[in-house]
Length: 393
Image (cartoon, rainbow, N blue to C red; front, side, top):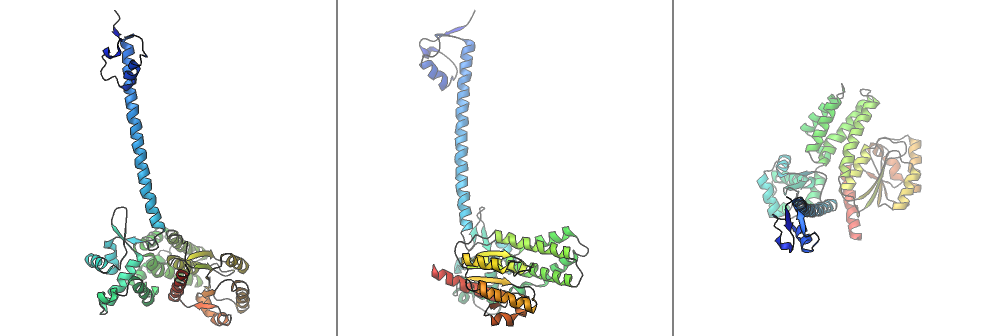
């Protein structure tokens, strides 16, 4: 005998938790008066399925809201990173800063709180991150205290003045200490016989644990210079010299790519003259310009004077720097200086640097082209340009 249910009126149906779909259907009299047990079971299943789908949609909506919230926070952090002029490619936790400066963590915290000279940022994990500039500043302060200075008097000078004094009083070549000397010998040793894995592991590891400017002038540039000397002596071949050069270039480009893109600041063009393929020094100049907030146009090696003049005419740079690693023959040097004076000087202030420029000093001086003796003089030049650019805005 078939079991049936009377559906008149709808509220007489007794189904365990039929769900809103069933109740709506019953209240609207959408079913026949009599339903079989399988039909009621099917309706109950549909109701339960509706409830499950409803919960699933709610979960999806909650997930979307979480994603939106995360993206909002993430993009905000990205904007803060891109447009924070203080932030540099390397940041350091306080234990690393203590090791790099020789100061205790307690002293660093007290100086930060009491004098306001440090400008750490907060990472996503809420830990303080100190910049390369903070490390340079702390080192300078420790040197001054060791010489009898007072932290109270030094702090009155302010952060920017202390940083300027630190740069002026400590040429980067002074970073080549015993540790870097030992590392340099190990790197050169891994080139004869050539051991790529050892060379890259040691180089990458060294660059990763110190502020990049320190690694640049204490490791990368001395390595480039020494390998160049070995090539001239015939002790390494061209292929190996190119390999080391490319490793160094990659490190500098990587550091530059992590710096914020400057939208303001002095415009600086950096290039090598025609037929000059050695551009590590020029790349270093470009990096130093970038970390000081300049808008840098880095053109690289072997740039024809006509092309350089065309770019300068378009961008109107405040300064154009030409890197001369090697001295040119007299005739070629004279023609080049005449071309620079005739085609580039009318649209941009010219400066030259490098061993070759110093060797051709008299020729450049007669043409009233500025000679940058070293990186310290370059820094002073950039600081003046930065102040002038700020005053115009």
